Every structure is written in C-alpha cells, then in structure tokens.
Length: 608
Ligand SMILES: [Fe+2]
Image (tube, helix red, strand yellow):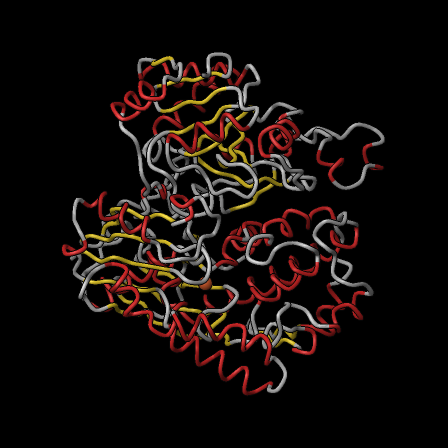
C-alpha cells in the first residue's frame, strides 16, 4: 500500500510517501523552491518522494490531503455571518483564492499530480494526532494536539492504542491557545507563524508582570485546561490583524513595530504569555491523562514546538514518557494523513516498538541502561541525500578545490577543526523533515567558546538573536551536562544546564540588559546556555546518525566535552539548505570556515 500524504495552501506545504506503514520519504516544499514557508502545491516535494520510492504517480494507491477545505470554508463563512458587517474587508480579501483554488482542491490536486486517483481528505487535528501517535514508539498513549486553528478545532485530546486512534475532546475556534500566542507574537512586533520561537526565546529575559492582566481580561482557563477567550481583545475572527484596540488599552501602548527596538515590556509580555501557555498545556495534559488512563503522551500541532513548555510537561506533568512529532507544524500533517489513511481507512495493522520489545519506558528501564528510542521517524532524516559519486561529480563539475578524506578520518578532522574554534557547515546524510536541523544540514561549532554565540549570529546567520544556540550532546552523557536523562533527539525539550557545569556570572553582570546578558558566560558551555541557565537539548545516538555521533564523540575524546553547538544550515530568511549548490552558496555568502560534504572538506582558503 503506497500512500502519498500532502499538506499545502496555508503554511509550509509538504509531501510524504508511506509504503506499507513505513515512511520512505518526507520533505517540505520550501527546501526545493528556496521560498521560506512556501505554501503552494508541493510539486517538488512530491517529485522527490516518488523518486525516492522508485515509482511514478501511477504507482500510488491513495492520495491524502491533511485537512478538509470545505469545512474550513464553512468556518470562514459562519465567522463572517456572526460578525457581519464587521470583517467585510477581510472576508472579501480571502474570497478570490477560495473561489478560484481552495474550493476545487480535489480537482486541482489531481490536475497537479496528473492522477485520476481520488483524493481523500483528513481532518486537520486528526492528521496532527495521527502524526503524533502512529510513528511514536508507544503501544498506547494519550495524544494532545495544539495549534492556531484547523477547520474548527484548535486543540484536541485523543487516545491511541495499537492501530486505533479515537478523538475524545476538542476546543473550537475562536478559543485557541495557539492564536493567543500568535496574538502576542504580533503585539510584540514579530511575524505571526514564524516569530513564536522568538517570543519563547525572549521570555527568560522578562518578568511575568502581565499574567494577572491576561488572566483577568483575556483568557479564562478552566481546571481541565479548556479555555474561553474574550474576543473584545482580538481581531482575528473578522479583521486583518491579530489584536484589537483593547490590547493597547490593557497593556498601555500600541504593538511594537518590527523595526523598533525590543524593550523590557516585550520581554515581560513574552514571559507572561509563555507562562499562561504552559499552564494551559499542563492542565490539558492532566485532563488527557485522566480521560485516557494512558501513561504516555504524544504531542503535535504548532504549539508542540514550544520546547520550554514541553520540558515542563515532562518534569511536572502526569506522564511517564513523552514523544513529540518533530514536524509538529502543518508540514507534519502530510505524514499524519498518510498514517491515518493506512491504519484508520485501509485498516493496516500497526506493530509498535513497545509491542515488539524495541522500546522500554524510562521509568522501567534497567538502571544505567538508557531506554531505546525506537520510533518510526528514522531520526526525521527523511529527505534527499547525495552519494559519494554524486558529490565527486559535483566537485569536478564546479572545479571547487576539496580534500576527499577516507571515511574513517572525517570525524577526527572535523573534531580537530571544531576544537580549533572553526565554524563548520555539515552537510551529510538525508535532509531533516521538520523545522530543526539535526546534524545533516547543520552549522556546528565549539559549545565551550564564549564568543561562538556572537560569531555565529553576526558572521554566519546575519542576525542578533535573543536565543542562544542549541546543544547537541552524546546521549550517554546528557545527564552529566543537563538536568535531563531521557532522549531528546529532535531538540524539542528544554532543560537546565547541570549545576556542576554552571559558573557564577562575573561581578557587575547583573546590571546588564537584554542581549548583553546572553554574552556573559554562565556555564562551561556558554554558547548554548540561555540567561535562565536553560538549553534546548538534542541528544545524539550513533544508530540514528553515525557520522554526526562520531564527530561529537571525537570532539569529546579531544576535549572532554561531549557537547557541540548545532544550528540550522541557512542564513536569515532562507530555508535550510537542501542541495550541494545550496550548501556551497550559503558557505560562500557567510564567514563559515569549513564546508564538509560527506567525505569532502572545503575550506575558505582553498575555496574557488
Ligand atoms: Fe495545524
């Protein structure tokens, strides 16, 4: 059974090929078209998935689309009718695209694919739930999906067991913790659907000064985590912006414009909405636990990318184990609808890693033995890769000077360069599916370096970031360096740096403000330590990513530090690199020192 899953026409379109319940390929369209968050039909991603599967479109048994456009259209109509004549402008603005394209989605998809096969439509949150549960290692789990909005649903609780997935509860539009977060993203001057990560990174600089105001005026949070929002404060139901005038009156100022400086106010607002979000997520998790009786939790939906909240769920929530879909946003819907079709529509059986004995809970694992992390995501390394021959041909064709190392020498050479302070573009293996680079399309550096944060930001990424970079750490050493002793292969859990690795900030540093605070070393791995001593951890195992593991291992042998910096291989406003040309162009545009293409090493000195 070959199923093609698609998500498109909103944000981050993607395609996925599932063959007999196994993911053969998955990729976001933006990586091929080089347009960040490209939402158009994922023609390139589909072509890649078919190529990887060695089939053409006629070899596909079913095509799934991740949501139901007609139900979404119904929400748009009903919302407009409920608030008419307000919202006429935004209603009229959205109509042409619906009338010309979105309402005819099935025909358009068939036309774009060149297939006569029917297109089956999943429900947006059921696709998220399927993407969270089916590839997880668990035989049984509670499933929580949280995002801005799908058709009508904004969050849901489901129960997965074997091949069954039952939707139990949902919160409906316009009440949405995802849209609340996006409203604050907009109000603090960042781009909705993109800047939420910045708000989360900004939160540790602030105080939760506005929590009471938000709770008193904007959102009512019930004991079970269900919410009601006061719509007087929002415009998203019928307007063109996220927040209404009430926001300005409540917080005493207009929204920050994107080009004006970030102030303590934005930091306090970020901290406040982050706290509210964590409270809602924790309460929802308690309800999901009570409703399902399950001991494990699966998460997806854009809000599941909030790794600070996820870290709290793991520490303070009622579940023994948590698994988060790495492509938690709408790109992952392509994967989810394919899985949902396989198991729920076509009745394919599912053998979970737990059932086959390949996974054990962190609470019952033998002392000293890390639990296996045998999910179906293959490290989320589901995109294109390039063979040694292809890279050799590319090097000859371009005339670029490159050293070809023996494969056993690559890790040692890269580790030596890292220890020498070099910034390295690491391009190897299959491209990651989802928003994070996990060691195949990554820029890596020395986590011990106090200047690495500034160097990477200013010379490579061309931005000033409130967030430190993320650490990649050998799985077997994670507990010695962070207050975490579980797998975090997808960089979706935040934990504190271990107290033994922290250093007291130098005298006078408490006077510093904003980003200057981040430049003060707070640990022996300052490049990856946030101002509240937290870090967004990626644990690395050899079986998931051998060369990446070997590099960090060689760095550890050399320096005694099993932690390196991992940031995505791209510059600001560009998608992560996909091809050899993308990688080389990015390398040339920046002050990166070395580019590693599998066994080929290019340095700036020898670059053409
Ligand atoms: Fe979504």
